[in-house]
Length: 158
Length: 158
DNA sequence: TGCAATTATTTCAAGCTTGAAGTTTTAAAC
DNA sequence: GTTTAAAACTTCAAGCTTGAAATAATTGCA
Image (cartoon, rainbow over all chains, first blue to last red; front, top):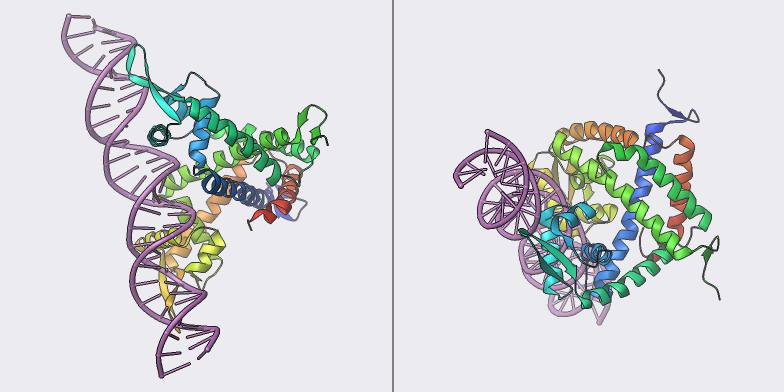
């Protein structure tokens, strides 16, 4: 049986590899720029921003292992990142009634204020970095990305 | 002046943010799976694979700082990754005639053979992980990604 | 009620990553 | 020819990341 072809000129595997490399190029480029801006303008990091974003959506806080699952990173990693947010006064750990093993990570008022500012800027930065795309482009790409994830989800990720 | 709108329902900034989150979800998911497979099946890492891929395209080798620029990672990072490839016998450092500061990193025959195998599997994995996309989807997405990078490139990357 | 299994979190080793400092070498300027 | 600036690479501190081990606590079962 013939392999999947693309216009009889290039196997599908080559086309998909080229797609992957372009995907990586765009996402790495944007992510790198976000990291630089967070560091240079706000003295913080993208992982801390991600944790704050998760906690901002859960005002009562999240258990460490829930945070780990939500962000798809290891428990050990979450421990370290929350440690630093606590050191900065942006989050705190709260005991869970009835379970002395567990605790909740929660944003402080200072953390909530800081995150509100960061979130607005983050949205503006993404808007700027993806300016070349029209609304139609954006909706098309979202559709394609979701289509790509229908199968990819069956290979072990959300 | 009214902000950019999308079908009068959502500002462009929100749409682009949603796009970014989907982009991140797909690329993180695939990258995570590649890392797992490289570790579990080949006892190696994605950064080492990336360095080998760069060196495979330059049979004579690349200078450390050329490698750093090519891969867009810091010199210090490249030093460490090449150290480990050398320890594994997959690469070696070669002196540059006339410049005792510089050296070339180059794949060994063992490294070239190992990379050929990894590259074939890598391509097959990407093909598998992006199976839901038809050739038309793939070409469309490549086009959109490139369009996105026309402006994004002006913000300090590539 | 006691014990084994499981859970929640932290700690740990190893690898990666940045950006700056340090060292050596080369190139440019005078 | 000498001095200064720049280049090439490594080392370093700090942060992130995984997955496994360690510790403490809870749950479930006999």
